[in-house]
Structures are given as structure tokens and as C-alpha cells.
Length: 177
Image 1: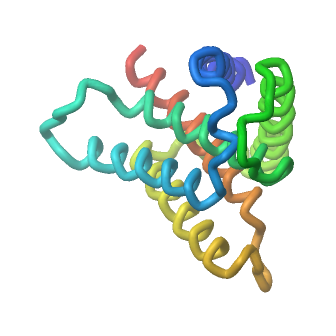
Image 2: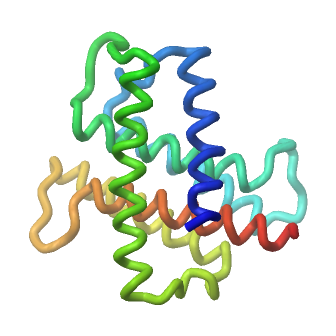
């Protein structure tokens, strides 16, 4: 849990600093736009994992952080709805961010109880593939206007992407240690 909270603090700090720079301009983004942003980041991670040469000097960690923050923004959009103009103060945005991260962390704790931290034995590339799979599922649900027959909703998929990204960041840090 300590490692999970350390990742949260890094992501939260970046979110706060970007809110100070840009305000809540992200509030105008519709869910498919946020999903596409996450998809771009996941594809870049996969490219970094597969390609020997890297042309942009940013590694996997910054992209996983981006996935976490965009997924949290998407969860906030699911809760609050999309707006035409930025409408959140820094303080209100932080409250919503923390609320969604808390819900997501509680989901992780429940799953960890059942699965026994199996993610610690996974490869980072497998976590990336699972994120991409979740993104394809979300895109399909979005194309179906949010309707599912037997599957989890969009929110559960965003939460899983957050948790997979947190796990990947923990594993990356352990590799570097």
C-alpha cells in the first residue's frame, strides 16, 4: 500500500501542477477524446517496449502517469458530465480526483485480497497489453452508446487501467532499484 500511495502522490502532484497551469480545460473533453488520449499513451508505451530506438526522451513512467491521470479525468467526467467551459476550481478538482482515486484504490485492495498480488509476478509488457485490451473494450462500449449486456461498465475499465498503470510504475521502480 505504501508503494501505491507513493505513485498516487506523484500523479496527484502532476495533476495539481497542470491544473495550476491550464485550469480545468480538460472538463470540455468527451469520454471518447479521453479514451483516445489514453490509447495514444498506451501505444507509445508498447512502442517503447518493442523498439530498440527511442526518439523522444521520455520513458514509460511518464506515459503510465498520463494514463492514470487521464483515466481519473474520465471517471470525473462520468460522474459530473462534460461541460462547454472549464468549471472547476483547483480545490474542487482535487476533491473529485481524490474521491475517484480512493474508489479505485479500494477496488485494487479487494482484488488483491482475492488474487494475492499476482500482478507482482507479471511482466510490464503484459500490463501494457491489458491496458490496451481495456481501451479496446471501452471504445466498443462507447460505440454501443454505453450499453453492455453482461460486461462491466466503462468506469470499471478505467479503474483497471489506473491500477495496471500503478502496478507497472511500482514494477519499473523496483527494476531500477
